[in-house]
Amino acid sequence: MIFNPIRIRESVNEVGIKRLLETEFDAQRPMGNVAIMQLNEIIRLYLVGMREQVSPLLSKRIDWISFAIEKNEDFGESGNFHQQSLRWALAIGIWMRDRVNAADVWGAARDFNAAALFDKNVFSKSELSTDRLDDYMALCCQSEQYEAGVIEYEKYSTKKNISLKRTLKPRDFGYVICLHELCGQFDKGDILNAGRKMLKANLENNWLSYGQYLVAATWLKIVYWSETCNILPGEIILKAYEDMPNVPRPTFV
Image (cartoon, rainbow, N blue to C red; front, side, top):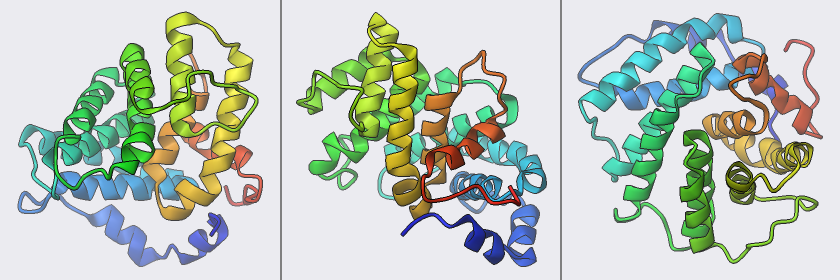
């Protein structure tokens, strides 16, 4: 299954947009989780040309997540995993709204990711070195905790000599970023090309087609954005179309 922006745009109706626009704060609901889901939806709508309609919603969702963090919202089987998810979404929301990298928020998400290792039924044994390591490396890159990223990667992966000529897994690319920030051992142009190959392997078939819009936005940010970058976060998200070989950018975007 490949991400299909035309079908998504056709399926977005006034009722769905109205529900998103009219959602109000309710202290009896897990508003942090509500905000995570709606932020994911906002990114989806950015990708189908509806940024102007939904970008004003960012501030409220950021507030709801901040409220959930303050009251230590309990949701799901793992409190640590939920707290990681809250901070991950908060950091992306702040970036989308304010064009800054909230390294401290990303760092807190990394800490909760590490803590979730000790919770039951969060990660399978195989996920420790795959999906979970993908997330951990992304959080290390964003929180600028590069040494922690190198240590964790080398703990779970047997790959020590990374070639930028092959298509890297997200965790491998995160390892490259961490090594480069610590040692400066790669060419920046080669890193960008490797990042784009990694995006091409994941955006259209893995992340976006399965609704993982927050994950996709995070890796797009890692590949393309920096504090000195003049490109708006919304345009960084739309760069997805430059790295989806089978999904041309629609005329309405």
